[in-house]
Amino acid sequence: MTAGDVYRALWRHKLFIVVLTAVFVGAAWYVSSRQTLTYEATALVRVQERGPNVGDAAGALVAAQSLAQTYAKIIDSGALKGEINRLVVNRPARRQVSEVTLSANADQDSPLLTITARSRNPASASIVADAAPRALSKFIRRTGPRSEQIVAVEIRSSSPVSRHMALNLAIALVIGLIFNSALALLIELFRDRLPELDELGQAVGHPVLATIPTLRLSPVAPPTGSPETDGVPEIEQSLASPTAPHVPGPPGPRVGPES
Image 1 (cartoon, rainbow, N blue to C red):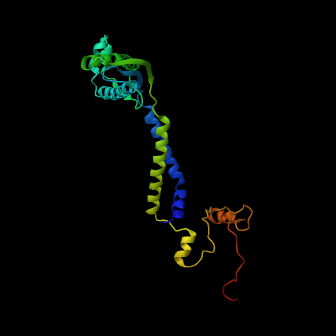
Image 2 (image 1 turned 180 degrees about the vertical axis):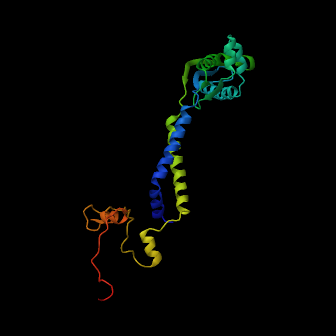
């Protein structure tokens, strides 16, 4: 099958491809719109290392970057949830804190650490993001040297995370076009169809001179005053009626004895 054959097959099934692709996109939009919103709150902290073994400022910066990556792994492991629960005084809020997902990301070239709290409840995400820097500071004082310190730089309140509607629709469009085109080619492969004109000419060895299109003929009633139907109903009615008058014929020869 050449590229031209593929193009013609896809063009013959263009309506099929368009309709099924629209179904794919509509299903992706419906699923994305039904997803529950997730709220996200962040806390930006700066890690400091001020020990006697740090040396100059460049060494302190390198040590702080290494500590930031270490703290990010500690937060991802869930080690701060106990400290956060102890910081949250409100009992209903404590039950909501257990449903919050806490993660961290450390910058490669700076001693900054971003702590992210995600939850379906915006208040829970804000509470955890606000308590995370204090919980991390207590964790460091309890487990590490006093030279390691963190400073809260910025705390952002919770905001809804995008459902990525446009991205989901674009992915559904691409997948729908690929899948439906492959399905149309598969249908074309197993379809019992007459070949095209050039293919038919190559198969029989003679060029196709003309084609007869499909004609849809319907019966046409004859006109009312045509000689074919003029007077026919009256004759049929007179012959079929039992009370029709007797029309005498011409007198025949008389048969009898000769005088």
